[in-house]
Length: 64
Image (cartoon, rainbow, N blue to C red; front, side, top):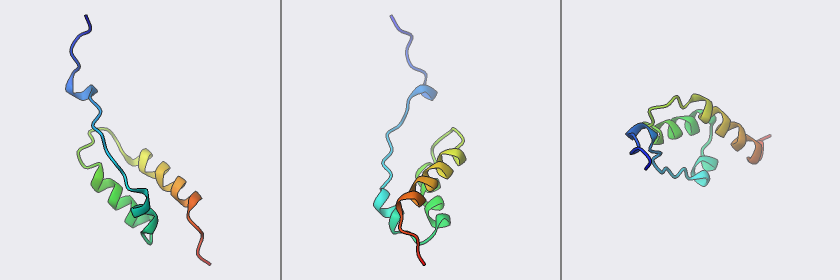
């Protein structure tokens, strides 16, 4: 038998609306929204957020 899972091992489901993030004007606004969504996350989120913003930058048209 496997030992019961400890609460810190459980991964909560989270949906991040990419369209919502893409519609935002700045990385600061996007980062604030993602931080808001991850408020209950007990692990550090900075690396995840910066990686996500980098990917978003790669798919958003650059303004001239």
